[in-house]
Image (cartoon, rainbow, N blue to C red; front, side, top):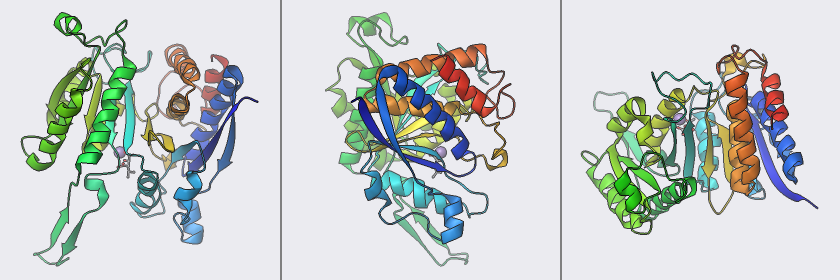
Length: 369
Ligand code: IPM
Ligand code: MN
């Protein structure tokens, strides 16, 4: 019996289902080639179901998903549903219920993909952002009063405890170890770093000059945990400067760790520098539980049903999922195939301008696997 992974599939809204089909096509091809199997169950959670039933998510959705090895998500967001309902009711709720406290977002420029950063190559744009995914401003601590008057007060707090910060930062250091080795250290290290035994770098992205309570906690924990990872060089950047360097000198980054809201913002910037939402993948990770992998681009409703959306972000998300399931050879093969297809085949990463349909792009990945 081959190893069988139970995957919950949430195609979701808009173009979600179309890209999910391509991701699963590649998953099946990888399973065949690398000798594992998947058993999949699809759930119709999303905008259409909400409009029909008035119910965003079944009460036991979290419990249901805990029965699976992993979750593969298309996209959440429907043009006929008020913004916030589905995002909070499905995506954020599942992140919280499954305690997916990491959002892992690689910023990787594949060969042949156009970046808006002049003169930068795939060598320069290759790092990962570890975004804290269940705390901070997203916890919903706050309130309002005297709404509609000129005295209206609104508060939304950035809330972190030591444990949340610690586990996130530790995961980020582990990523820096995972991405690098003594034989193949991160390209940004200098001779002195190498002599000191460093193999990679972790940058804390914060705002210690203004958010003095929260980021003093992050900063202290960062240097505490760093003691367990002497082979990783540490660096610090304020979030505004991080944005600057992500554009001007992306080669300065190996792994970045940051809080939930900063991570949300800088990873959209990162996605643009790697060729846009058509190619950016991410994982909502619970290292000891059930993780959920997704293309981060959203549901792109105006392209629904046209077969023109770029499925590579979903394919990349499937590849990430396999890495977390322990099929890292399959992950490498899919990433290699993506690199071949972006460099040799696609005309553009943009919807409708790839030179192929969504399904043909999926086929190209499978053929070159
Ligand atoms: C993301 C999205 C979500 C977030 C929204 C849809 C709630 O922007 O995954 O980055 O803010 O986390
Ligand atoms: Mn976002």
